Length: 268
Length: 293
Image 1 (cartoon, chains in turn red, cyan):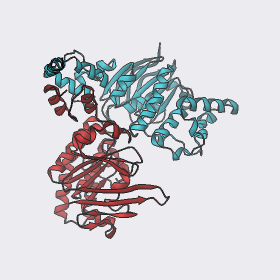
Image 2 (image 1 turned 120 degrees about the horizontal axis):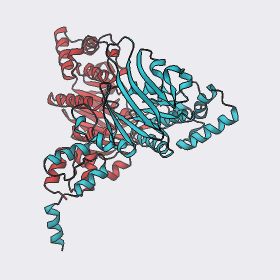
Image 3 (image 1 turned 45 degrees about the vertical axis):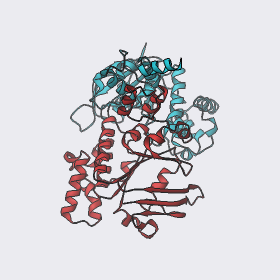
Image 4 (image 1 turned 60 degrees about the vertical axis):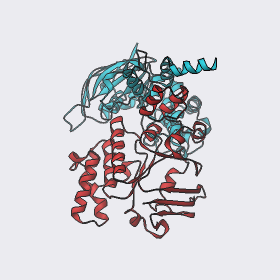
């Protein structure tokens, strides 16, 4: 399902202009990371995708739906949104009930709800925790419950707001795995992240934002290699990209495989 | 001289079966900077709470062994005595800020008011502390109008103004963006340079390698290993245990298998990695040099 954003502007009631003309096309099945300093407008932008915010000017289309013409509840069929802080979205007594809430609320028949819940729990490594109270789990597992409860809604588009904040290496790997599975299912995944190494290793397309505008948009290698421009929005290139630059590699590398290939071929 | 001394500390939270900390023996010398790494659930925060006296005074539960700071024993002190020994900074500055004060200045003075410091001394101490952490210009702002990095620096300042003997930081940058992270580590660097005794829990291993005298790896409530940052952060024992490992370490480990990393020790930082990889004799580089000649 294509996302089309055209000349999007948004001002908060306080008068702060958070988005200053964004035009963007995201195709079905794209994996996109949005990076940039706090206040760049990243969260404001993605909140337009599920109708939590409405454009001051311009438009946002999710498939054939203009977000102005559809309620947040209806847009929830197409766009799932995982909050940065799981505690802002969890409220049920058990993990199973929590994860079933979304698809049940969308009115899916009970067999389908059960299947979606099982799949989402499996993908999120939660199958053995269905009876647990989310608040008895550690913060890392609560994050997975929040993720599963959105996945279970089976939306074509999944938005992740800072998925790796406060997570340890094991859970970051788990989240990366979920993103891969979503990609295989043909879902569009859009993540806001400060974790630039995570971004480099899991996303093919990177959008850098600054002051309500798009600074860079393109293939990950292309964007992550633009050190000077990224510095203006306080983003450091990934560790291995920096190391490659230091060693004088001609191509921009962004993960271990690319680094080692460049090292072997002596890409300097 | 050890200012912190934990001997055989084992602790269980109320209503739990397995201990969150098991047989912890830990000495921290005056002026030392110790970093603690470990996966979620390893007991890092519990160890911070133990150092800060929240365990057992606030969380209750069952504790055995001895927790001593500057010659005082935690179990024989009250929590309000203990705050003068150990200051604890939380992950999220929101949890630290009192919510009872309208300005940053008042917020930082709050702890001093509680222990009855006279007004003129209080003003001086607050001003000195704000200068130290570089937030003097925020004095009249509301604590809630600040960015994450600024808020965390206010939280740190409100701890430092109490002049604790030991500063304990529990992942102080985990909720920060890159600017906030840099700001907060700037303050931590100042503290380290001033000779403050610091215990820092942190996932960002590249920062640890730049600061810490010693690193302790915690796993399943026990000390898995300790040593210099290089020794611990590049150890094979950390692999497959959900410890955060620097990309520089991982890539050099792989390169070493392929004969493309010549040094014995693995790198943690960009500098170390760049130096190590620069040792590789590269045929093409020689060819190019030859060609240019």
